[in-house]
Amino acid sequence: MKHILLFGPPGAGKGTQAQLMVNKYKFMHLSTGDMLRDEIKRATEIGLKAKKIIDSGQLVPDEIVAEMVRLRIKNMKNSTGIIFDGFPRTVAQACKLDEIMTAEKQEIAMMIAIDIHDEEIIKRILERGKVSQRSDDQDVNTIKKRIDTYNKQTAILADYYKQQKKFKSIDGRGSIENIFEKICELIEE
Ligand code: ATP
Ligand code: MG
Picture 1 (cartoon, rainbow, N blue to C red):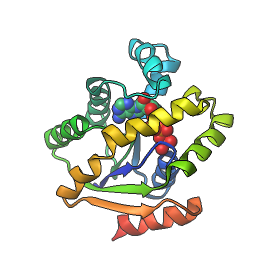
Picture 2 (cartoon, rainbow, N blue to C red):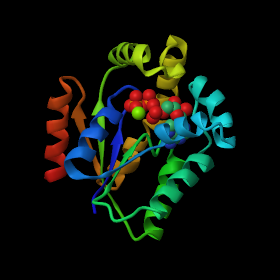
Picture 3 (cartoon, rainbow, N blue to C red):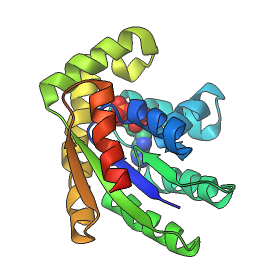
């Protein structure tokens, strides 16, 4: 099994690329953002709590997302691998993930970072907001706050995986197909 972390700022195109990877390699897609939006839709206790935090551009508490991820992995049925999208987002989450994977006798193969500039991201997210109905995609201030949160709490994870010699990055400009090709090369290397 090959477990891959897709990494990059909000709007980098993680979800889009993850979907292509699922189609091609039959990986299981694990997106904490999607899982949280599902909780919101079902108006669960977690969902009600998460909604406010997400709309303010901040991170949902580590324990909540880590527990969702742990359960999802524990109940995973024979998969060719997991593609992690939007998790881990803090050093605490990365440590927790190491614990979870060790308990399941699994290992992260690599982190693939999608490199992209802030101006491009804001443009893309606002475009997506027009069709996605995601409230956090429609307000420039929320988007800026998300980028800020990313820079302050998440970007540092590149170092965490560099230390483990698992970090790889690709240029996030270009077409969806073009970026996907680069990701496939890394996976099949
Ligand atoms: P992309 O556009 O690349 O899909 P994104 O950051 O716009 O990424 P999601 O990953 O769907 O979107 O996350 C949406 C929001 O959900 C985040 O801003 C955050 O509030 C919350 N969230 C998602 N994953 C986590 C996580 N691992 N830890 C804490 N909060 C999270
Ligand atoms: Mg996403």
